[in-house]
Image 1: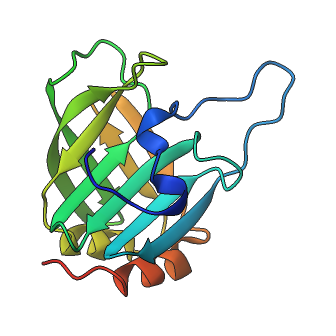
Image 2: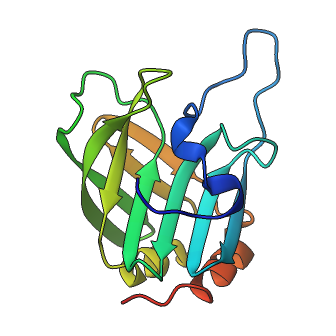
Length: 162
């Protein structure tokens, strides 16, 4: 996760993955967010209150010509470096991106990361109406449609690759 990015995404690889609230605490509220600048664009789904609680991170480093997708959920029973497909589905549209298991040393969580893939097919899939299902190993995560369209439009207007 070597792309230097802006704002709330710049240090997210040093922080912990998505987690439910502690017993008795309300579940966190998540939103789609995008940011661009310095030749980079990011689209994330996570907590707008903290960069420590992001689930889906899509980065396009225009200046470095690097793309990165992180699905930041704990994938138990995996080994660091193990190959894993990140399978995205929306409506009848499906896409698999080859990635690998990475870790957050502070939490020990294992999560999926893919790098250097074509960004346009991902953007096209995210434009499909309805929720997006993301499968990483045996973990299935649903990303809602609500709020995605304007943030995706902002992201799509800022990336220059493909």
